[in-house]
Length: 536
Image (cartoon, rainbow, N blue to C red; front, side, top):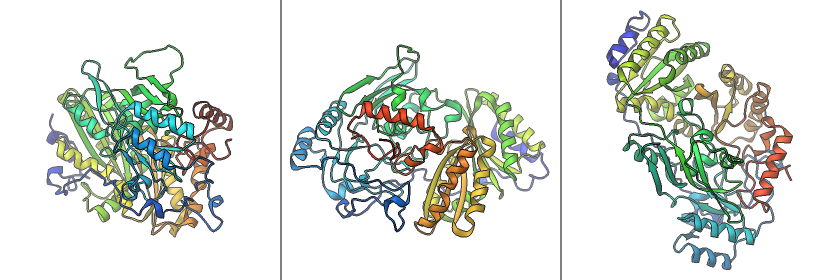
């Protein structure tokens, strides 16, 4: 069954007959799926040592997200630079103009003052660097693609930036098992292209795939658009190579799917945000490339209808369901206003992006046909369109993937990554709008319904400490009340470290502190991140 037959399902509904249109006739502009992540800025020498994120008149103590006082780490000397230049010929960067982009996160919300950028190519070089820094008590900031949203990927003060960008080699790929082994600096999109040529795909897909690196993805336990189908990195990552704070290389780079000998140490480093060790290589299980892919873009009048559509979708699409994403009408307004992306269907309060992927196009099309017919006759959706061609699939996906880009044009953005019971997801957006009133320019909600992950974003004309004080801790208290998590996939970094107790008990955090002390006794790896300031 082809796309036109499936579209006929929509046309059987009197309510949709006049509004439905083929995607090929929608006249949508070409989509550039790559968000430009490289930023230009001032020399790091002009940055102050105090990293003021959202400070009030009382200085750093006024916000739990603000940077703490600098810890008593050593400062880089001429002798240190001599060692780095000898270890990394031509790859120990001190030119302020070249270091600057690595000092600042892509949201321009956090800026460090590091004067040294190191770019190793091998695990041995990383080991030499960390061994030396450990002996000298020099703080190190591991950095991948620098696409993080919580200030975890850039220095807070003058930490040495250790970039994995040149560690970008694919080490092996087993065509039978689908297991890929590569260095940590491989860009996610490059890995995807490599695998697609071999009839496989990566088990994760992110909007920042053109810049983010697999090591950073693992270090933050990134989720993304395919988690519903393939699960989290805790399941798909089979092995890691990690360099510890003292330079010791921990080789857990297994390619076995089953290995029950002792503790599964790799799990410690997945989601640890570079605070326990520097990931240098990854082995990951990759699924076969689906032969049949369909994307449906639907509109709903209420969030309750959206949830019922999700329930129906899971039951009727089953094993071919690979993504179920949503965005609200405010997201669509920003896409229209700032990126000039036309709505492919009629205006609705809520929009859904559903993706199916399988091995038999006829089988998948029939299942999708049956689902759409039931959704129509049940009046769960009010409009929709289907895409089966790659270019049109990318166009529909852009309506979800480019929301983050649209937000950057709407003003200063406060970004929140919340995990909640699925029935509570949009209630938080509604309550936040009521709570903030006219103090915010925009309050928008979008995310991964399939795994209960809401991306709530609040924009204002400029950075506004008073607005931030209204958002936090309200959003964290609300999330804790409904047994949610304050960080579903972005991590804690610098900005959220002191809010960890809203999601984890004090005994649990204390154990985390003991693990940190065991693996990094001097605390040189990514200091001021992930763990709260009161943990000594």
